[in-house]
Image 1 (cartoon, one colour):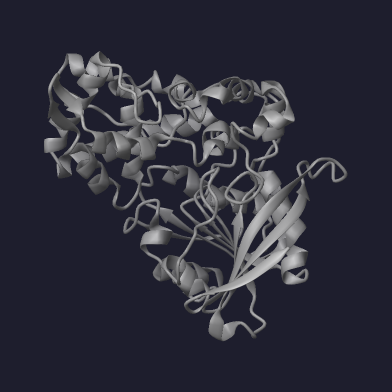
Image 2 (cartoon, rainbow, N blue to C red):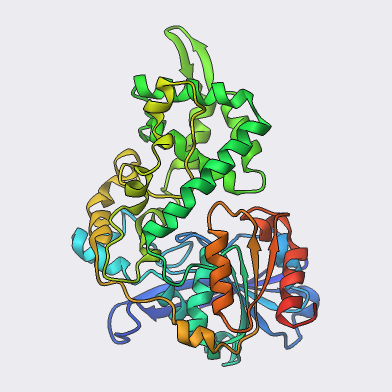
Length: 433
């Protein structure tokens, strides 16, 4: 089923594909994938190569561009672009509190969700490639978790790739989730310290909000219970190029004077609700740690366990002294499934996933060492979300991969840098620089 329509300068076509839930069981249950194809209007009649975009996450659908913004416009100069909603996201068959009970109870839901990692996403790409390109290899661009998927693509189906581009998403090939978070918390602390150096007035503001949350039961308009740990998790903003400024503007209007004394303002609560709720992307919370599962050890709520090794993130201890409150970053914790109405019905499902010990490897070091696909990767010098040292170690393990290491951008550099980032990666992949 396809539908074609126009935006200024663009011809867009909606595609829907049916693929197996489990590619090892092609005769079994199926799910639907959605993808939007785009071509510049003045190139619609040309036989252009394809570029497929894999969004970051996990759990987010592809960008919904209006016009030729960011890297998208640069890509359209020489490619037809396929914006794929990875399984479970966007307009593809959803995986959320409303749909997952169709697969059974919590244990069955966890089994279902094991098919929503990078290996299944890559096999989806291979299942639809012939229908899109006629069988020709395509170029893949992976942002963040999309880059994890690209690394898996190079491991299990490199024959499908003409070239591979990664922005802020080279994963460790063998790190357990615990290793990932032991490296992450010091990075987050550096970002918080830099934020307070830029906005020193936010030290007292953050402490005041945290103290209020420790002594009040605050429910956001959607029923989300705003705890101090949830407030700290707003530090996820600090990994983006404008994140420090966004956090500052959020904190500066937190309180309003009411009849019963100071209260958190409606405007503050509404904005925080939008930042914290997983209703638009519950899959992120459900499989976030599962993307690191590759050996018999369970992930077992890794971010929560490892956080205990960094007591400086304990808000109550901080407020008992005079230190600045530390925000946290990109991590998922069991209390989120208690606080967030969109996640509460999925708490048992998440527990089953955290306890699994049968994760399959996602990367093939031997095949990566023999890689013949042109590969280029942007590695951000102090990326808060993906450890730079892990990324560079992986870069050295993939034959022929060329890196662009830069501190000009944060993790969202492909959006902020737009055409220039894609220009650089294409030139590297083509050995033009």
